[in-house]
Length: 376
Ligand code: SAH
Image (cartoon, rainbow, N blue to C red; front, side, top):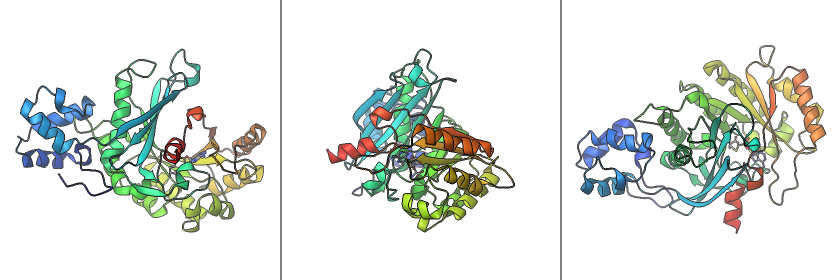
């Protein structure tokens, strides 16, 4: 495999396509059929350690481990809350960069904090170490971009989460991941190639991938318009989430500086075109910030900019109570203002939900765990 460049992760089984995996085992001097065998252990057994793979000759296990399965993630600090149904993990990468992933299980009988509804699990993953988008309300945005993650570093977060669930380490019994959201650290569409490789392996049926439905995968973006256009051509029905946070350019220029490159109108046009191409309802993320973007006039303005073909059938607004970052001048909206904002949207016929605040006491969303670790 390729030698390690500083910063860049060593190449890994999880970086390869099915065809590349076959070539790689042959290049190592092993029979071609070993590729499917290794993939079964990795994707079906969720096991990245060949030491216990008894169907592989003992002398080959070490070679396979060294050639294809270098350790990518080291668990620095797991934190759990919501009765054990939210598990956040801080990971150290081979070059010392820190990232995090969050596993959230819903609808666990007997655990109120896990919410109602059917038993399901969502994993929130990071796509970059740090982020270059510099949104001032986001903890990750404050530290700048360290580097892109490799596909294997992204997939390794998923394998770890899947393993934790399969092993029954989360209350509710052994389970599976139903949804994956690219809402951890980083701007996924700024790491486009690795994200596409990741999605292809996530959705590939076993033994070549994890067999997760594309519909259960959400790619969240601050608004890299050309990349949204490109994503629409991939023929993959992943859900697109657009982090809008303001309906007007004046405010959005401040909250999401990339808006000075692609403005609100261009972004909503691209999001709507994504809906037309994929028939997938687009999710509009809007963090409610007290007295900044939470006025009823802005709710009305939001409805105006989202209106397409006379209605709102293409879109769903997801309001996120701001999770204040340390030292920030901003905080979450008052409950009354939040309710009024929702009411304006509902009256206009916009589908709207307020996101639950899972994991709030362990710095839930938003890169705060990695940020505080790096500072400490
Ligand atoms: N770069 C991607 C993924 C970011 S994280 C994007 O911008 O969509 C996922 C969501 O969390 C984004 O909508 C982001 O704007 C939001 N977010 C970031 N910091 C937050 C905070 N402090 N409180 C609430 N939401 C936040």
